[in-house]
Structures are given as C-alpha cells and as structure tokens.
Image (cartoon, rainbow, N blue to C red):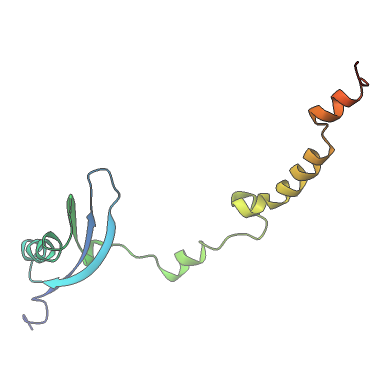
Length: 114
C-alpha cells in the first residue's frame, strides 16, 4: 500500500527571463518536492535559458466542479464585451469618412484664382 503513494504528481512552470510570464511545461512524477525540483532543473537547464521554475504539487491545485464550469458560459447578449461586438463600427466609420469633405473639395469652392 505504501508503494502506491510513493510518487506524487507535480506540475512544472517556467519563465525564460525575469520579466516574462510563467508558462506551463509538463507534469512529472517524483517522490517529493525536492526531487521534483531536481528533475525539473535537469529538463530545463540543459536545453534553454531559464530565469525561474515553479513546481506545484497537483494535489494543491483546486479544480472547478461541473456546476462551477456551467457558470462560465457567456450570455448571448454580451457581445459588447468582446471586440467582435464592435464590428459594425468599422462600417459606420467608413460611411462617415466617405461623407467628409476633403481639403481639395473645400478649396475648389472658392473658384480659380488668377
């Protein structure tokens, strides 16, 4: 029974520079956090530049329940919250610009000067 719980699952995140964001990399199995850290370092330090690594035990990650996931659905009348909801403005603006007077047209009203 003790062998079943020997390995724990860890999620590994890294970032390339101190100013970049963390990115998920992979999962790994390790007996403890320290060993997971060593394995994560071995995977990254040899291949690419790394500014920081995060090792997170999967059991400490809270997942959403099915009921909670249902609350993520968007309402149909909320298009104004996304950029596609403003698509009609491009047509409106084009129509407005076409109706505007340009400098050449305004100067032509004054007649020709000799």
